[in-house]
Amino acid sequence: MLLASVSATPSAWMILPFVGMLLAIAVMPFVAKGHWERCYHRWSMALGVLSIGYYFLVLHNPERVVHTGHEYLSFLALIGSLFTVAGGIHIMVKGEAKPWANVLYLLFAAGTANLIGTTGASMLLVRPWIRMNKYRVTGFHIVFFIFIVSNVAGCLTPIGDPPLFLGYLKGVPFWWVMQHCWAAWGVAIGLLLGVFFILDTWNFRKAPRQIREAETRRETWRFGGGLNLFFLAIILGAVFINNPPFLREAVMVAAALASYFTTSREVHNANDFSLAPLKEVAWLFFGIFATMMPALDLLQARASVLGLETEMHFYWGAGALSGVLDNAPTYLAFLAAAFGTAGLPIESGMPEFLASHGSYLIAISVGAVFFGAMTYIGNGPNFMVKAIADQAKVETPGFFRYIICYSAPILLPVLFVVGMLFFSRWRIF
Image (cartoon, rainbow, N blue to C red; front, side):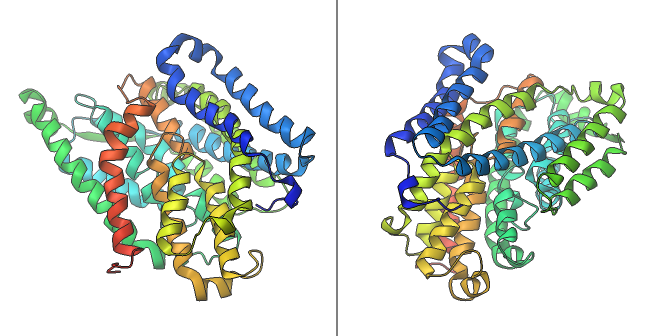
């Protein structure tokens, strides 16, 4: 994502709409919940239009807005189509899962995320996750699902998470990420599952005896809406369509519409399917995509003065911003900075870059993917999982409680361990 010229660099003041967007998402549901639920789309539109108008009228850089608009439409087409198709697949679970069964389910979901993406796995598997724990589901069940399935899991293939797919389009070989990131993936998944097992065991032991002893013996599984697996395959295949423009998005939308109109009402009702979560995500990410343009452009324009020299710099830098910015453009910004550090052109120098500075790309890839779980806005599926859980009447933590009670004390130490093991001067891998 390159700036049109040096003169097109935005003013630092134009970060304020993005800060305002983040604060609105974090604070408004608590201080003015009714107003926010009625008017969140207006807030998002107002702040987004402010940034768009700045690029048109002050920077005279409409190409930047068009590029971001294409990214937003691609994002929405992927998120929306996977949400719709997954809503037509019903996995019926009867019973109450024991902690070991929950760990195995999360591990299975982590592998699945690399085949159908973190978005696809999240939309497909979060409803069964809620149902299999329906008698004792709490906020930490949703949070750990977001940590593992919606983010960390997707670090092994370009299909797994959007940042890695962008790297694939830039010339990173398909299996390169798996070959170089599997150990970090295994450590992070293992640590998170270990912490989850401890918490879930404690939660399970608090459950009434009749649930622990009776319900766990009656666990059954059934599957409905099998035709949607065909539509899911179409969407995943469309990911690799690059030309002509918007054909990829058109195929995704067509598959989603076909899924919606061919899925029986019984399946949709069984899933409590509604387009409300998709509507919320679409509006909020309109504001996020628009207002984050100045932040990303300033980052790229000033990359040379940021002192990015080591793997740890790229890991924590890409990670920190991926927690509050969408991780896909953050990945591109730090990839561009890494190429600048190496003195290579990003459009044609990938083979040489991987040979001489491949460790930078490992750090950027792991940081962008893993840190997307630090906040609800770090990655698209996070908000959608929360919205589905809220719709199912599961008590989920708010924006700040998510950070203070979960991502800061649990996820951040795991990310620190990963950084020390793989990217520090004392690394052992």
